[in-house]
Image (cartoon, rainbow, N blue to C red; front, side):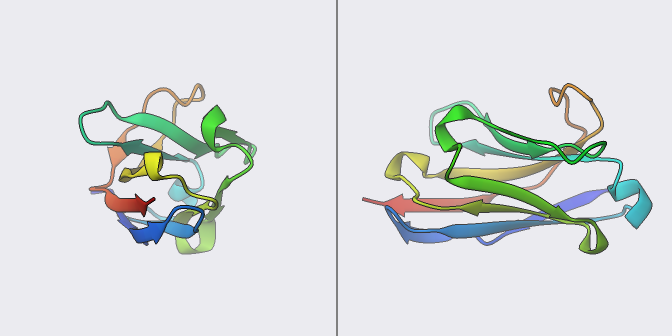
Length: 123
């Protein structure tokens, strides 16, 4: 059974940085390398939104416009882990951040989800 476990969330002041991690289990190293990995977030009272993804096939990355230049997604296949480096955080980015894994080349469908990690940005 595939499990994704996020960590690294917490409280940070606006303008600060956090690095989120998502560790996958239940997948071999080879299998992990064939999954796209993504980060999403859900603020209170709002729908979950896409933040960033890294594709397995070519390692290409994709970001929502609002985080471009501030967030960086990366993956370390040997550790079956994906990271989200978040810089210059804004108070409006307070949300639960979720990790996801999938194999859809369009990055629209995701097969597995983590439980989420809370990020709180104080103004």
